[in-house]
Image (cartoon, rainbow, N blue to C red; front, side, top):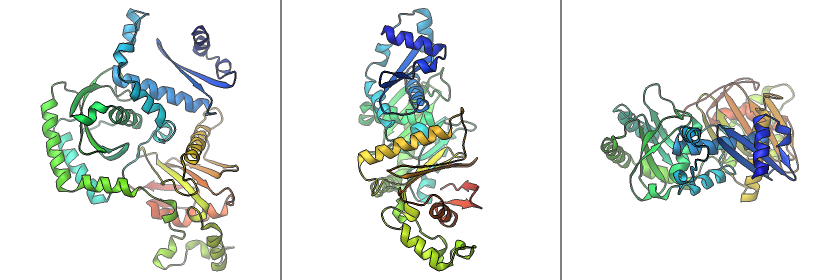
Length: 409
């Protein structure tokens, strides 16, 4: 304990080199007023990644207690907040576990459950109705994926708050057994004040969260939930959500190998200098096999404007937990490197090792992270496929240096 105090005091003085490594471990501190958070890691994650994780853990604590807990320490330096956090061990354990599989924890974006446009519109319309009746935020989620999110006028919900709120709900067994009305704090929205959350599971995976500033709004929110549930059942939103969970999301092997050929047209790149139909056929044969087109194994796409991301499902050859975790760590390091203010930020980055080729492409509109077969060529297969096929995913492309926008679903 004395060692931790000494190291933490150095962190306060920003002597980071003295605390990053201790023996074979990396030790990272986050000091928030009177509260010290410590991470001891042997995972070879970057300092930036570990610090973000500590920030999220601190945010989870604030969600439960609000930042006003600092006043308790100001009044009594020996204040013990353990009783206030009683029974929340599983909440923090769940969040820590998410650092090894949930991209939201480092992308600062949320993902949506794949649904037909009409289905999502039906959910959004009824949520908008209740938001207009005095609800601050109305959120319909299926596990960690958003079905629909509606806020009152000028109110916005940060993706980190979405992550912490969904983790709090999913990891608390009490929310599953009955409707609940609990005080919570959204650290990015207002770290000093409580909101009140009405939570009700509508089926085994799908739950509704209604947030309000009023502490006596339980009966109003209960009536709102009854209206919402009735519409969701009538429009079969809940059934479609369950089917989507079973079917899974986008798979790289289902992506088009040639966007132009879908309509019988000649692919645009065939008319470019140096490319013939014969060479295009050789390109397709060379890079279609395990995985998707151009040797693509997996990708994540983040819309900066929407604060949303979409990613492909894991499939062969990244089809076991160890391989998936390795790729997740690689993405995490790539993200930290791209956003390192000391040496960046960067627009593109290309890495190759014995496991895969990694490529990151960042513009003012989007971020793309992709993993390819380690034998894939550095430039030609990926950029040709990107130029001619990426629009089929909902992205309007112009010459490959830039990208316009990611269309709303």
